[in-house]
Length: 338
Image 1: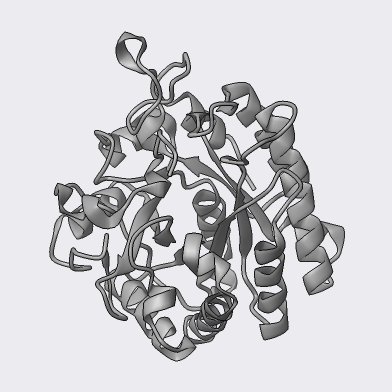
Image 2: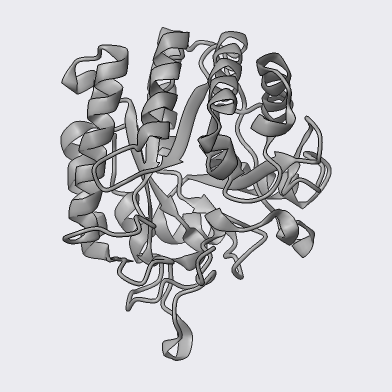
């Protein structure tokens, strides 16, 4: 474990912190012609939904972030196992009836919505605790039903990611979810090397293609590389090109279609690697790439850190560790229009 732990790496022990995590959106039926403009607008908005962890890092009120940046959607983390094949916020809080549901209602009341993220680095993972694809799909469905979700993010990391059996279970479960929820958007988020997905990531994508999983966005987290050369912006572009090649090869897509099925979830400011600092300039590089290739998703970890540290402090759960204006990274991401 690194010394500076980003929220994505947090353990489920923070579950009792009392703040809120936010779930996903209403699974909608296939849009008809009259619904197409609204569906297209929602698709673009959810593509730029930054992560916010409301149980960590002195979180900002989502509605304040919306007012300051124009962002309408958030990716809220994390749904974990309660020890069995049952989903709860941080593995401990019920899906409905608490602060998490209240937060989602406030976002929706302000004209926004949420993508709920399942998984993360630490804690009990549903992919491991559910013994079959059908059981795992049932756990995902509980989350979808709780909030009438339109989108779901599976953040597959650590032991979920390294186990081939679990990778297959996640893919097969998502295929069931896609079948049972026409129109739902799914993202699969994973770590990467500077040249693209590692062997586990490539295998996951191949398993998805072999299963006929029409995943909307294979998303990489281009940080915590271990080592890299050049700027974090250029390393991210290199990683995205590797991801695009893997998706194109597995699915037989054209170049254009492959780009439209990949995404990036960066980290703002200093990461938990001493040689990594992701600047607003790096985010501008990513924005240019996203605009050029019309990628499926451009987001980052996390809104909690999108502010300068007070008193010259180092990066942590509530600040980026770099000089910046408030929400500088969120405002760059919000410029992406699909």
